[in-house]
Length: 312
Image (tube, rainbow, N blue to C red; front, top):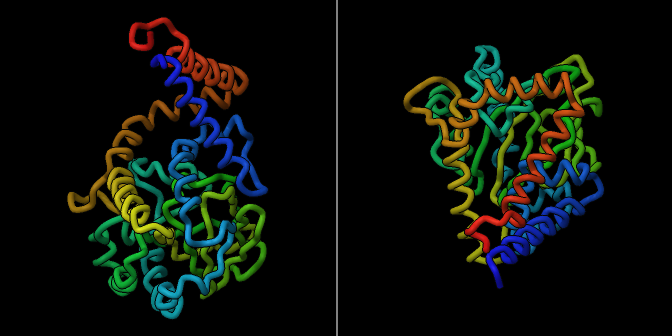
């Protein structure tokens, strides 16, 4: 088997993995978008997580299956009070230097965050400003990342699929409109946030968010390690999650004690080029799409068909 054929087989297997993830659930992105979406990178890994998952393949899961989160829900008023103090002081905000690739598209829609933990030790600013919430989070080993997140009135987060199936998403309403006009839709299933009301869902299904009210929404937001049937898969997922957390860390404030991961450092450096690209896309959308797909086609040709020595 020639190297060129091996590359072609690997490419086809990757596209098949993306297709299988794409077909999972009822709500879908366009396949051409899914194929180049950042979530496609993890498609092979995610299929492995789905295969060994110890929870049902459902968009919104039974919260009773996660009793370790009871302590968070029981202390929601304490968590709310610390979140409100942070919000009043302006600490819940968008990334100051564009160094948060994970949520960059959300900031444009009025979404803001304050990290409590991020796949490791708590952030020093969180320990200083909201110690009670940090202590609660630290008491649950399965919580890998946690934050406070706000959503502005009359805002919407468009349909998207989070990339990493090694975790599940937990939301706890702190200050909400208590209305169906402020809700998240996971594969079309609706969950309206309410004060003290919580939910666990699989964020690798396509989901979107709407706040049609005049009131901001404040929630506690966490990533919980996905329960897996195999000890080996749990160990692998734990290590992969730790690595991903390390390279995607983002600080709450400019401080030498709060690190920025490699991915976010590169993301921040390229911010100016992305802004130019967006401006070009807005002005010439058809040409932008043509150039994007031409670039993809060229890359595939170089990898699979081009007569260069490494693939002879």
